[in-house]
Image (cartoon, rainbow, N blue to C red; front, side, top):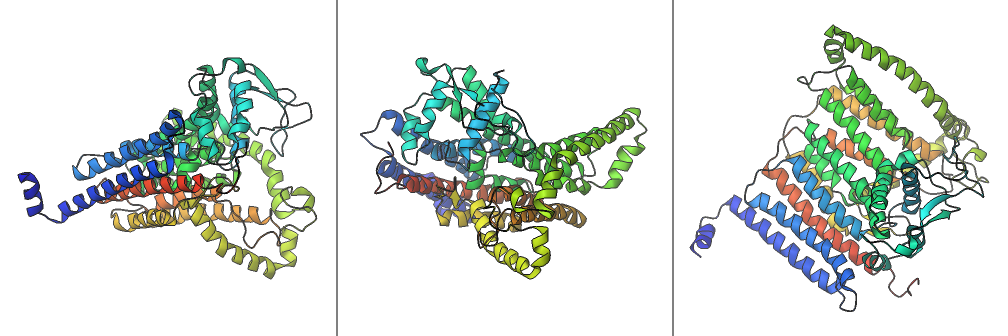
Length: 552
């Protein structure tokens, strides 16, 4: 009792802030407990359903208490370790709150990842091939295999909320249905390129080899997608010279957590965009010695971006953020024979790769941008005129006006989605409370202003900014060629295309500041905002079908 009295009698600013942190944590946990019993707990439901919801809140409370402990006890911490812990916690919660098939195009992504798993397990498809336009040749007698349990359970999961929760909670996780282990032929479902789903396909493969049930299989693929990005984030935070806090904060945006917790192959785009930017900033440091094989690593990151979204290959401009004189002094003047041999291999390989890429992707640039015709664009009604080079030449003012009007509307649309105001596929659009999104966005802006330190050089801002601008311009032109003037009042740039750009911009604007109390306090507040975000998402999804009958 005396200790408590002395604590309050000797109150100062630091103690007051710690006390405020405790009060906020207590209020958040009390609200979470109330929300669980008021909205999630159902005495008539099975224990597994109540536990499904309960584990979400247990994890949220645990990460809240963990970050609070670091803050008030002045414990030592670092970005990489804290990122791994918080990212695992929040991706776990997001996967349960927004379960499989709720993400953007996730039904198609799941089947494609399953097809990739078949390839890993040596299972051949029937009459399935590749073409240069859509990646797959699909005919009436084409099929691939799925385990009967995974195939027949899918329609029960592919229903609207809140019925998905009970299907998963009462489903098979570790144990599987013994009578549904044979493979069945899957017709009329065309998977896309397996190379886009190596990580999620690997997760599904592990679950199938371990004999997991349907719920275990479908969650394992998602978990491996999340785990790959968590590992990539951990490495990035080890190497990044600037923008560590900004990357940490951006990775904890609800929309980013949701995307990285799904089957979307946009994860691969985020991963290799992050890897390329991290390496370019790392190698640009004076004390880091360059080698010829570093060019192979950088080129590999660029090549891995091409199969997912070719437009991100334009990030190769970032390589020039590494001073040319470093390449000259560290590699050309090294007088080491193996450096020169590797350089020769790189030049020869670059010629081969450039030829392959030019041949494979030439038609896309040629037909979809400059010489676009109605018959070459399948995404719009062929009876209407699409934006093309010819149309632009004849309607310059009209095109510029449409573009400007579209930018004004599309900018706020994308900001709202990237922060996380709306999640999931277009038929769902689950909403995070606006107050939470505003708090998270303000915290990001505050971190750029408040966390002081050295920033990158001005000429590096120019190089990195040029890469972002050219990529954005290419995305914008690509969207102009896909939609007609009467299609919409905005250009309709998918927010998923812009996530690597926003992420890179946040990192570039950051400083080299080390871990401090200000950054930890911002992370702590963001964690509290995420607790309320998850509760808001659950409330929205619980009431999605109010007044409507059950779908089965």
